Image (tube, rainbow, N blue to C red; front, side):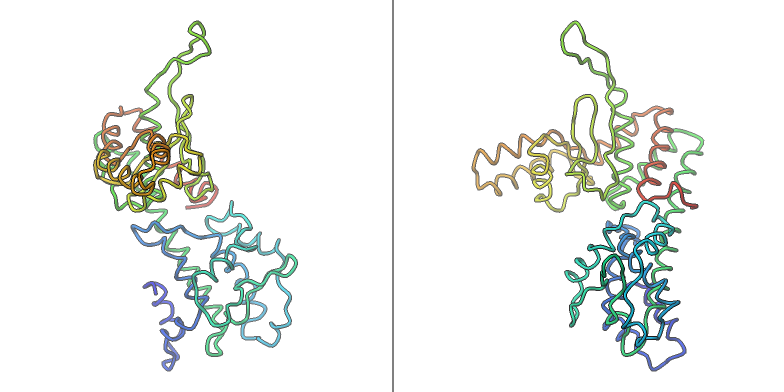
Length: 363
């Protein structure tokens, strides 16, 4: 149980000394699921914010609290809230402006059953021809309606996310306003470490690579007589949790693919290669290890995985175009001039707000 959830439980039952908060939590699959989905507030967490899943539950709880709190007899005859009513509500919440309807329709139930062990094994969200409601089994623990408790936990989670977002945005604004380019570089390099959150690493690494490659020009054309001079341009394909088939960045005009990864599961590297049908990929890796060491480990893994079969071994090895680590990113960062550093900071600010749906929210 996360500390902030424990604090809320204690406060919620402070006037009922006979209530064991650990027993409430341990017997509530709903509270356990919320706890599981709220890892993003941790400083070095790689966990997704899971706002779609959390807001799907929150939207139903919001209306339930006013209509059916402590009214189990009335609730068992309820047929559900209209999709549009719920969707409008959770789109209005912090970071929810661009959330889709997948969580309401299937995602929560699938994950809930896979990760939370409970006796009934019922769906958390009951879907009834475009209407939605929470199963009554998960709204009561020892006869106590926990809907208001769950709402308090979700509200505090949102509050903590806002604080975290504001802190990073303030840090970026502070960076932009620093006096010297050297100070800005040192501060960015300080953030760019192995402990940084995965999505922040992806945003910073993209911004560095974009500004590094933009100074490199090539000549391209259909014939020697029609060659044109072009500078390399890097594009981000979408948010870090997007289903992009293993492509995080794409380079024009060379058509290079870039995938951001961590040194913890080489199987994931091969899966990324498979997703793009063995098209060469440049791996951008959140590590301070030397790229040569990573390449050696990866090729050893490929050899073991392929059982030495040449056709499989060659297929994967040839798909590794380049390996870039924090070491190269920092080297290229310190090579950037003042104009590029300022553009890099603007890129970080923009893509951070895009990533967390903050462009149209007050932060």
